[in-house]
Image (cartoon, rainbow, N blue to C red; front, side, top):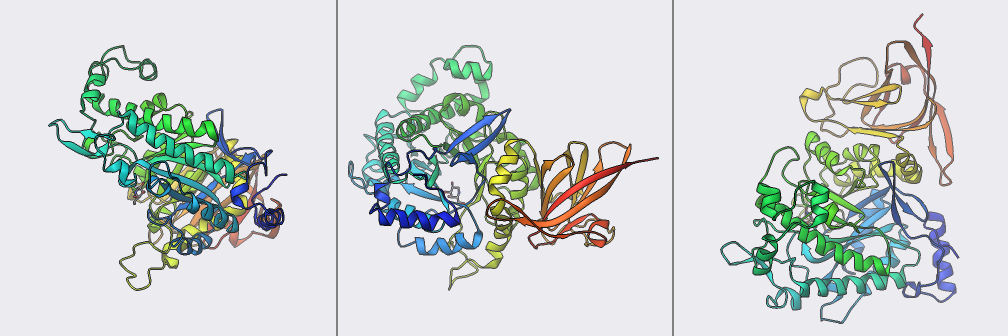
Length: 548
Ligand code: DGJ
């Protein structure tokens, strides 16, 4: 028996489970033929397969301390209002194994039940040895026992706050807890509500480029592993000989990555669903920064190749994007969007100017995009009495997710075929409030902050909020949508004039059928295709006629 997730089948699935007397804790065997989620790659592009078909993860992450039964009532109203299809939730080591060897998965069981009732998938974030590099989420029996679970050592011999990646004892304990988590999931989640797991959270160390413990020192003076030499093309030697200035950084990244890979590999041996690591990034993607100024050791933008060589069992290295500058944001996307790495943004800022980057990400074929910190427990200095997120916080993100939720499958399929484009409103005046996309034989120009009639030059929206997404449906036919933007099509060359054959406004229904609403013509197409904040989707057929 197959159990699919959709608004229509969720209720039926619940009824079936109830009638057959099987709660979520007895899921094994329910859906043996349901394919496991996985990430597939072809021709340098990637798809997240869920229930056997490409899926665009449109998510949001709850706040760090919201993974408790008492907090969930403050989570779901925000997620429902956002129209996400996936919720990212931390699972903390201290919560599942407060006493060594005694596991408690009651929160996970509750979370699964409630996620299914809300018709969303889950991504679990394993807060283990490292959470923003710190061991704060490790149980007391780990983080307070420095002899058994040693911290990193600074060059002067004093202890750093973060746990060392070189301790077999720490790895064994973390791995055992993680395996217990995945094993529980295997038994209670046959329908794969959980589609991915993040292994650790922003690992590494701040203020220290690498561990200087006795064990680390010996390894640092030893040879660079062959896999890393192969990946970087360097000649054999010690870390300092091979990597010079970057030796500490690469050494630390290698060992943290090996550790995370070992945890992930053990989990995947139990249930093989996509597992990834998330990265705290450098201040900007363009300039050199000392490793001690960011989370050295983690999969930062400076060491993607090191992590690729060291952690081959991870399906993705995912940037946490908290730089709202347009050039910086795109710069980071460029670095993580690789043939050997699916673009996956599991955290981005929740301030309103981040919402526009959804268009840029999905246009590039990202398999997922999720702002951080969306629930009604969010700390809002502006709302001291009733800490509820209002329209100001939710609306910019909800508009995009609501627009795309009916086409999350279609979009993911087209993205995997390389048929999607997108852009976000720039903030640098040098860009003149425009972005240009090369789409086969056409050039599409998105401009921001124009009236929907006439040729007044773009002056930008009241704040950078606009975005455009375009997908090729067939020859000369495109799905076009956007938010506070105008789109103009032009030919690539100078040998033809373009004309709209037909511009249809409509929407996709739950079965994926296009539902016609009306034709745009006259003032609605004479000045480009103008998108307001209203959710509008167009199917645009372009034709041409000769110059003479
Ligand atoms: C990045 C971390 O991964 C999250 O858990 C959270 O601490 C955010 N930073 C806070 O903005």
